[in-house]
Image (cartoon, rainbow, N blue to C red; front, side, top):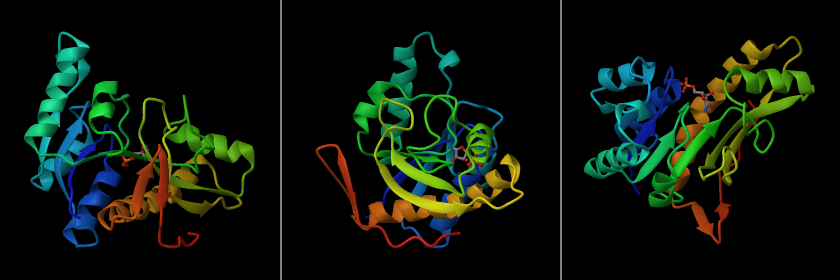
Length: 213
Ligand code: GRF
């Protein structure tokens, strides 16, 4: 199967770039048709422009009410015939109406092995600081379904990353990010191959084996 993807991103957009490259090189057959950011100055929007992909800056403060904002967002998704939403460093909680509409078709990437180091406050460098503090020898990245509660949707695919002696949060973040760039396209491929099934809110996945990186 081939999906029309919408990537939501607030920051650098390196995962967006990895997904676009996977699509251009044929590693995945789906394509990014739309990029949405709440940050007009994001690298993600610049990347979309560079690759000639439709993009929109949509932020809650541009609308009179949450209802108007959500209506606008849903209209963009519909107009672009979006099948799947990928969150990649998107710093806003999606409105429940969007989650309902795209139930089991919204995924996110998180820079740790969920359920560890997820939830409130666990974003960006804070995740890696917490991993270093914990003394864990292995961390990683997770692609998971998005539901109404932060980082709590079922995990689809994970990739482990070693914490090396001498690592600090910054060096670890860089290594995990490199793993994310491989993991996100692999997760999309699982959907394309029909390997992700959801029954009674449980995910059944038949992933390819993941090497330790
Ligand atoms: C990544 O670490 C991702 O796991 C997290 O936000 C970061 C986004 O990085 N959700 P980028 O904007 O894709 O470079």
